Length: 195
Length: 160
Image 1 (cartoon, helix red, strand yellow):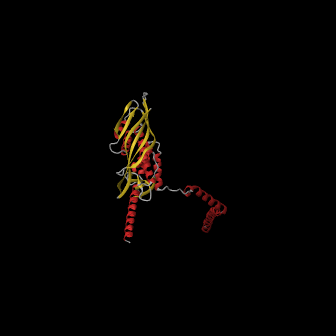
Image 2 (cartoon, helix red, strand yellow; image 1 turned 60 degrees about the vertical axis):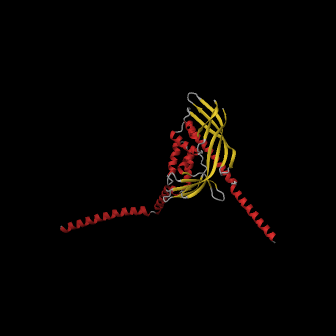
Image 3 (cartoon, one colour; image 1 turned 120 degrees about the vertical axis):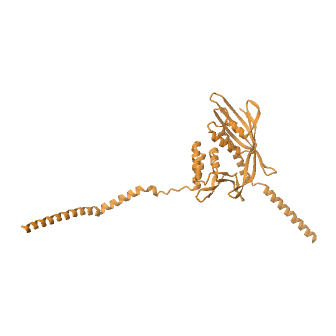
């Protein structure tokens, strides 16, 4: 009788432990549809950046508009993030803080500049890190064309990898606590440059 | 002699009175005939009714007033599809009049599961309208609006 009671006790203990483990595991896993929404959100931020870069580089954009768009574009990045710049005429890649990159882009000595990003996709899915941040890498291809009225012209295509950080954060809106997914872009590294 | 003169004046007076009565009677008869002719009256009524019907057709057409959210979504579309920066800015200024202030918070739901909704980073209406102008990315629809005492939007929830 005593042995039976002890066995029951152990059975209950094991059962409770299993339930606890499954509960923690379930909390840790994100619903696949939610994960898909977060993936799309991060991808959308990169597409937004591509639009901002086109506007900043466009010589027809007014100075005040370019400054405002630079502010919006800078907000997409984590602090101290850098942007890689390459050229067909040199081997090395130069890295600039994003704000400096935008200002150099706006000041390029061409009469017409067009920048288009395409084939934007994940090369490394968002993975949860021990601190709760999701980290992934998105690749883009950038077509740059700069032409001057005096005939000067430069064109290239670069492949760039952008590190993405996604973390759940909280903020107060009208006295309520709102949880949101904060997407930040990290360094943009040049991996290929071609004509 | 005196009685003859009196008779003459009396006769003149009677004749004058008869003329006045006769004339006014003719005029009234004409007026009466104008009004009392049933064919003419019917025709006049029909003409008046036709004129009235021709004047008010626009008032009778039921025009559906766009709701506040439809008006706002129309502005979103106009800003995202604007052909120039000036045109987009003009639509932004008009859209902002629907809000209590340009810093009214905007929440964007990216996913709604069984629990609390998942949001993108909250923004303000001014920044959101400028986002539409810059990116042309108009995927979000109005899900909820919180109005102030003056009927202006003080908080907006969108859904992607």
